[in-house]
Length: 174
View 1 (cartoon, rainbow, N blue to C red):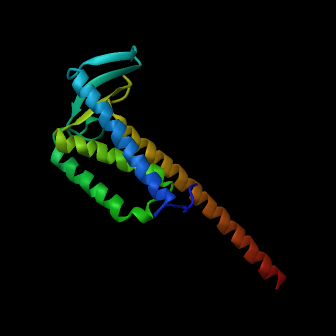
View 2 (cartoon, rainbow, N blue to C red):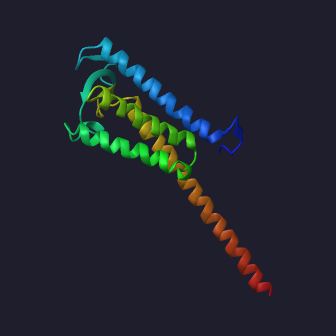
View 3 (tube, rainbow, N blue to C red):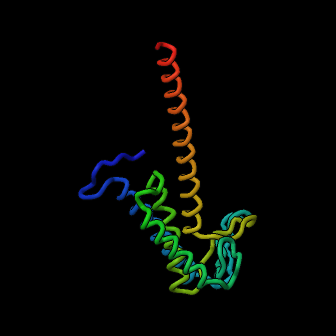
């Protein structure tokens, strides 16, 4: 876990949040530009035949193409998510790097929706809906945050049990 050491005027965890967000946005947008400029729409390049392909699609829906055509709604929801992240930043669970990765994923897809009117998806596992780096960042970041939240919850339960044992011992001794 990252502590609250300072990095210049910023806490280390704040720097990691920004680095995570920038990393995801940069690689998400770079890969999408390469796909948009180097492939025809709906073209597919097998990397591992029948296992992993690069397939260029334009997603006007939500996750995995659900609710196609509701781009204005998803732009609004993305702005709300960005606002929540920024407004409640200090209350976000640790590690902040994972929160930054989720934030970067939200921004990466929001940039597409605002600039293109759709999200570029291209990572095709053949047995799963086609997705992109931003989607991966959102999913991985949430899994990491949930993992650390469960660890913290477990620590809290252990600390409560220890405190209860100490109180019970004190009661017996008095």
